[in-house]
Amino acid sequence: MKIFNTEVYFQKRIEPIIGIKTIFIRISFLLLGLAIAGLIFLINGINPVQAYYDMIQVNLLLIPNTIARFIPLLAIGIGLAIPFKARVDNIGAEGQYVIGMLTATGTAFLFPDLPAIILIPIMFINSFILGAIWAIPVVLFRAKGGFQGADVVVSFLLVFPALYLMEWLVSDPWRDPETGFTYSSLLPINARLPKIPGTPIYISIFLVLAITLLVYYYLFRTINGIPKTKLGYEINVLGKNPLAGRIAGMSFFKVILITMIFSGGMAAIAGAGEVAGNSLRLGVKSQGYGFTGIAVAYLGGLNPLGIIVSALFFAALKVGGLALTGIPSTVLQLFSGIIIFFVLLSEFFFRFTLKTRRSI
Image (tube, rainbow, N blue to C red; front, side, top):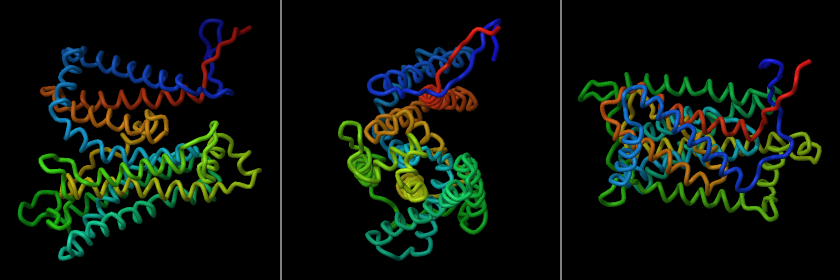
């Protein structure tokens, strides 16, 4: 692109940005997104300072609700961080999340008389398996098809069959016969997750936190910048330099298979937990956690400990939206979209740098 006599172009970074600089850059882009969103509020006659203050107040009053929203975001964010680290772009976590909801619901309807101690684990196991299977086409097209962008295209396209399947199920075979509305019957009592007394926080939070810490311990801990485990090392090398990894004898197919199985399974676990712990039935629409989870993973620096913080932040944004009463839904959606856009834009900055040169 030319501006007057100066050519402006993007160049891939040779030296990666590391250390405290990464945190500073991510926070800077996040604050820029909040500023732009504030400008949108102002254009619509809303005081942005008051709006953000109200959002903080609501979160302080509804901390348990924020933590309840935090659970699925953390599960999806952790699941996405691993393939993203290997430069495998799973954009379809929303579809895998929906498959988890459908599988958990179908399992509960199929075995309504099983005791909760047996039924609930089966719901989660089945959801993980089906979510992983839903992610397998990404592996086949990316690793075997030779198409560099197949992971983005295939994972994204697989979202729509999952959504249409859910819409059909709640509109016909699983439709609640008592109300006739387009949502499913309630889950049986023994298929519902117990909650921490007096709160909306369901107990799968302990499962998700345990998985998060295990992922950090086995895949992300480093010594002098080098991951401690073989798989963690392979994910790191193939993500930074796939050619070097293959020359060293690393199997890209193995890495993408393991990372996508885990990623699809974790998104499905998030869906199972949400339907069994929060909504207790299926509706026509999904909450969009799968897409938000992409920003959660990147804002957390693809590090499990950072993702815990970023999942809390995005959960707070969702709950804080309750404070913005009287604001058109399109403005609220635009607000969320702007924040996610600037978080993802920061990742582009990490990979590329802006260069200029004089044109002759």
